[in-house]
Amino acid sequence: MGLDVNAPLFVISVAAELAEMHPQTLRQYDRLGIVRPNRAPGRARRYSQRDVEALREVQRLSGEGVSLEGIKRILELENQVDALRAKVSELSAELDHARSSPRSRKDSRVFAAGSAGGDVVSLSRGQRPRPRSSAVVLWRP
Image (cartoon, rainbow, N blue to C red; front, top):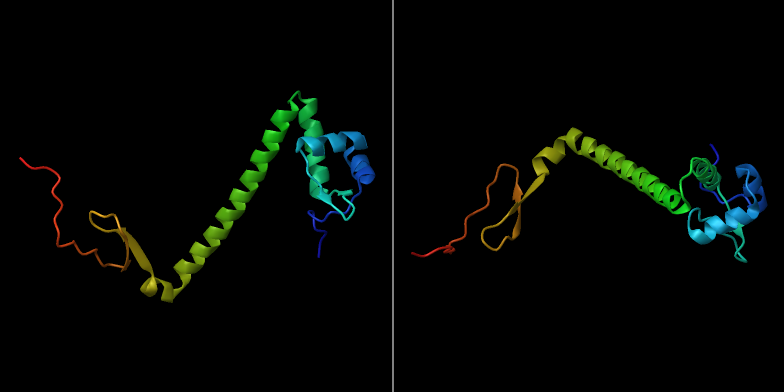
């Protein structure tokens, strides 16, 4: 079993040393919302390995001339991409499971838009929605 990279293990002085930064810089990044560590009882900051990696990335981007606001946005977008990748993997696994299950094909439901009201109706596979008896007049001469 490996180390959880999200576990809040490091106090600010250790995290600063690992990231090769001054502790005050870490406090500033926390205030700006660039890297948000967990809080221990008593409000002490606790940094995870993932936080330290993010701090190193901040340092790299800063060295390339990216502003702190730009860095914050880059990190937010990277987090969003990671979350979306995880969701796609989850949905792909669910879809593979549904496709491989013989029962799912018989019992699967299809949803369609009903007539004029736009109601959503549930149908069995191969079934068509029934037209409503009342006609909708869109134009009269």
